[in-house]
Image 1 (cartoon, rainbow, N blue to C red):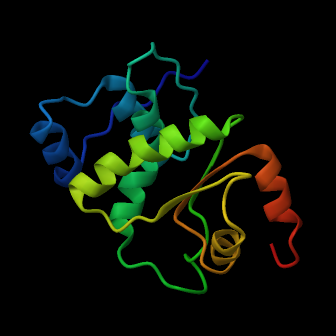
Image 2 (image 1 turned 180 degrees about the vertical axis):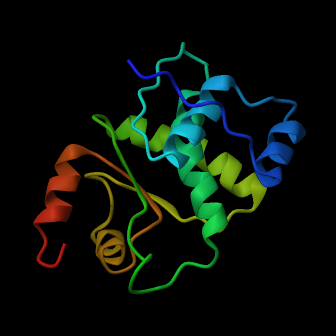
Image 3 (image 1 turned 90 degrees about the vertical axis):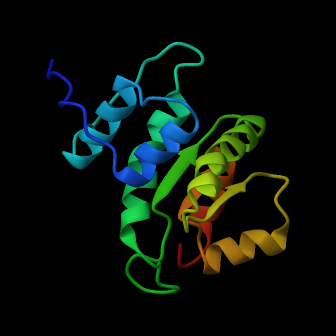
Length: 150
């Protein structure tokens, strides 16, 4: 078994956000960033309330924050991170929790969910202008991928 990479250090943007909330990043959150930066696979196991959702998305948030303006079309304009959830209620919870740091830090990162309840007009827009982070269910992913040009 390969040991986890040494924990990464947070950029000032994210370190300041943690500090404003009175938090310190947890070791497993920093290890997830380090694993992503190293191009390694990672499996995260942490107790309830251990910051797993944030740990799982921190590598994406950091990379997207450093990316700069997103092109409307062409390279870099597709979905960066896909989150697959077995439950649409969990998709909603994760979206709400993910939006907190995005709003509070002021990141230009577009997050959307796609479930069976999503309006057709929004699904069409997602096809043409996909969000940076898409939260969806297996059924909706199958439908999304079945579209011509997906």
